[in-house]
Length: 492
Image (cartoon, helix red, strand yellow):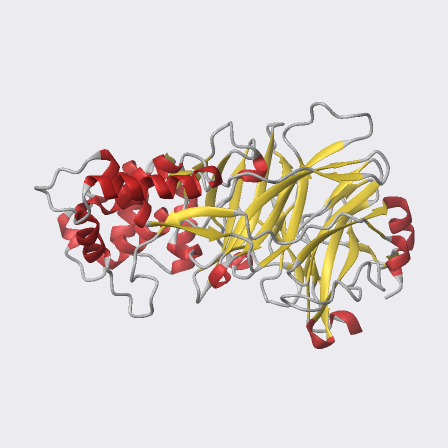
């Protein structure tokens, strides 16, 4: 690989910061392999404390932790409400006692104590107070903590003018946001039923009775209306339970307007993603109605199996999360195009686990079987190839950053060019690759891996954030014209 002279590696480097913590519900015993809940015995012991000791303990907790979290008292109150059914009904607790119980059922989690990696970059919603030639960008991050649980974090940087770059402060308490119900699309539930092989009279009745868009409450209202004759069938209850699980996997998260982007954390919120939200690929999308939105695909992991998800947001403050469906969504690494192409919603994917392909979403919201674009065929990518984020539109074509895996599972970044009107056509390729781990970047939590989930083009320069061995995030840039000049036409 000899394209390294094309690329400028910038001095800005992000390291994992174990001081970045969120506050989570903690139920003693349930974190053990046996899973024996100890909530009742803990509450019994707390109730033995007199009011003076209760007040002293709470004051001590607040003095230690109040500055580390937004609305700590509100979180303690919420956690108390989650477990208050364990408190005997005849006992009237003081506000201090309720808050202290909430504190005992809380714990801190360091979101990036293990690793920080796999960033993507998009234009920031706020472009005020900038100098000529500057662009403010929002950077998503895969942050990994105890138990190898991944969540999605954010930070902000300013690019330009020229090859200048400034990473903005990302200190302060983190917030996981307020989870709410999603607005569901009936077509997506029908697509999920196809994936799950669900087709019986109970499911058919449910689909026919739902409006085009429905809430969680409207879904439950339709469930109770399923005719008794259908409920009596042997498979009906299992079907309805499965559909309830599918609907519950879609949700929304909102953050207070006063919480800046770098303090927002998208934290696993459903069983399907309980072990991680991995490798979010964000892109700013132009919708057919002329409006812009942010969309990000990621991999949900429950500890045993993976599934694809997409995040939708207008402002990176309110997020809606829904499942991806169809044969092309069965593996990791989908990346959406930033606009419709001749009326088609397109995405890059790697549905077979080793080939980079192009998929189209049909009218039923299912991602169809992929057209192969790039197969492993060079020494540095013979194990597998994939994308490093969404395609970037240039006058010459769709610029796709790729990754390849070679000997010793060494990851490197490459590039290819797709036809603007017919992206199934690969019109040029960078055969020797673009960026691979240097002697420093090869060392880390996952050695020899260089990986990105998406860059941006700004004033003729391609900016690429990348994870290096899952232990740090680096930044590189390259002049677009120089990059395109080095690419070799494929002849087809």
